[in-house]
Figure: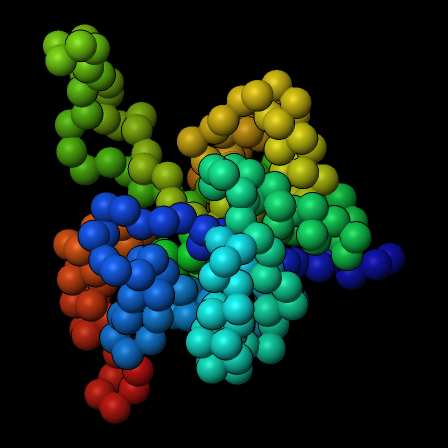
Length: 239
């Protein structure tokens, strides 16, 4: 019986316009390292991950290879794949690059390149759940009251107890997520995340309780918050 493999797919092809910086947000410094480097490091040091595929805007690949992958000595990054027009297209590009190296039952962990505070424990649990389900979605219960609004008017107030805020990692068996992306591409469907593509094909996604500190760095305020979390959790003298 062949051993099940687990690969990581890290899309970091966004332009980060809400950050208002002169460079793309994934290269902004967070506690002494580029944000995307901090993200990659979690997967590099995980014994569960065998290979990492990065998805980067094509024009930035040489910069990323030199200033992130080589500079940090990331040995598990086996390929840097050009991004697509939308995040969904970027993920599909990465899945296509992986396809010759994985069976349908191997696991793919998809994680935002600008979500650097994911813990090894969350990563491990996500992988374990994906091996026995159609998908594993790291998420946290919403804290605030949510309103459904149409044309500036509140339509209703969903029951907060049933609402969860999706994060990454999102983990799947390769055949499940690849087929879901193919179906979405064929139907012209754009989902809000990868799990939504599996959902529309009838797959069952199991929740992995997440961590409120596992934030996606999108705005300058997010960067300040991430710095604060790292300052508390990182021993003095370590980056």
